[in-house]
Image 1 (tube, rainbow, N blue to C red):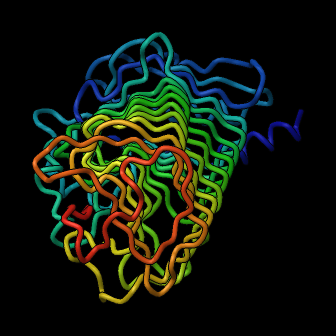
Image 2 (cartoon, rainbow, N blue to C red; image 1 turned 180 degrees about the vertical axis):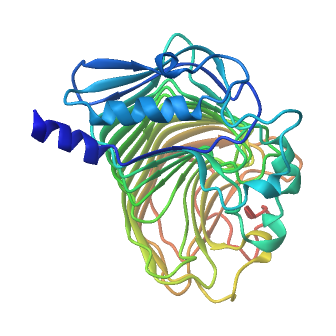
Length: 408
């Protein structure tokens, strides 16, 4: 028992709660279970927490601490109700006061965690509207000065489910350094004008599964950063937003390779992009391989399929040199629906490191706008093709194509 207690304690390193917003931040119930079998319950109301305007952060931290010290697998329970943390009277404080705060909720260093909302609960409201108005990262290129709603760091063999992240000030969920974690039945909600509110960001993690998410936001529904391995994204509904994106890659030195991304059975509606791979102009050396997108439906998506190695949002590239990111073993299969632009299939690779082994199979994308017939733009790539193809891959080159490039 003593060994088990020590193990549970080390597995529960950090659960930090830095909510600095007003009432109704959380509508619960939520349960966080530590361990893989049933155990004791640690109800925050027994630590003095009450629904309403009272700050529950200390009660929740105390319950978490006791659960981690338990000799048996345990459960932290937030009963049904609306709760506040570090509540401020009146309107939310100026977003500048949030600078330096990494995330509102961070769960770190836990094995066998189940983090779930039950009975329709589990809504985290980041109340980001004021912050979006003052987010200047489009001008500065520095987009990490506001807190995320959630950070899940260094989790193992864990499950996060039935959670809603609403109106985050920046990214909604960040999954970093995790192994064998499933995110299931996740809902993310923010308006299109909410800058840099990526839905779920994955980085330096292995064996992650995202299944059954509904994501509407002002940036990528799912963004995939360096060091990601064996990621499965399936049954995701995306819109509004910028699609599901691998990258952007190559912006920083020593990025770890991305190996094994499998996106399947996803639907995009009224988004800027569908499925996308992007690397920076003038990038550092990096690589990504085994990137596969299958059984995708797009409804009025501006850029349904994008491979863009000339990525330069807001003209923030340090140089205009060719991307040094090596891309290989990529497939786009069974993608259908309607495009919002004539350039429905864009495969623009680096002239310094042309893409290797790109497959295009069974593409059926329709466009009925004023730009003319649907087409495909290609550069520095020779894709292999199979099945029905509309548009025909590489029907135009970048010098003659009129379709708009993705800028964000």
